[in-house]
Length: 275
Image (cartoon, rainbow, N blue to C red; front, top):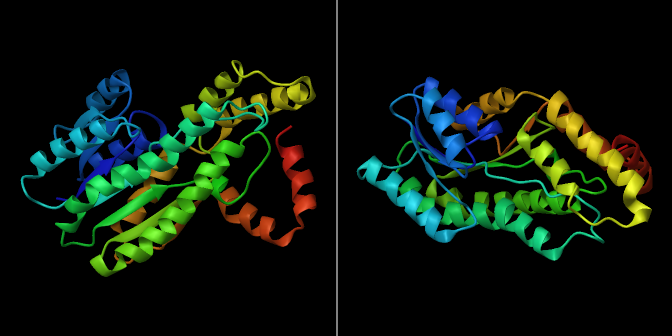
């Protein structure tokens, strides 16, 4: 039976992926930040699924979670790790508190690296094509105003995925980057809500208000998390997985357009899109 750790499994893409893989015969070890989300997830899963607290910004929490998984595996290897935990921090870079910027990187970048470091010994015990999936974003390929911190963290994951793919190739561990477009998850509403507490200079106010409304719309009108869950399942089960999977039309088209148009032309297009 294939086995997988999924971080950030309490809601959105993580929860959809955990339930989808559970229903298709995987043994899922789901890490959740909010215990209430964990209770909901556990009710929807089978008896095989292990749901446990996991804070990817806390090394002790990571080690404790991985130790539980190791005990459950009973000496067997782990088939896959899905690094999905993530958060979106929005706001003009000029007024963004440095602590929020630091937290963005702790969750979206440092936490992914710390988790992978602890899980690698379990993956190395697996003989059947072990792999790591980093859930990135179209936001790691294209940047727009007022989401600079989030984009920077996702650009960083692109580099980390590329470097680790090369470093782990001799061990037979595949590393895959997932790059979905906008997905209907709580991350958008949380980012929009967090903007309410951010002091914003008057010069930005009108544009930030418009961007906040854009975030709320994306949270309601974007692709289903299940579509990304199916893409993750594809990346986990392909005999020879691609190094990257783009999720949705926007994730396929927009990065290509970005490479073709001059910076200032794209800037104007991006400004219109965020209004």
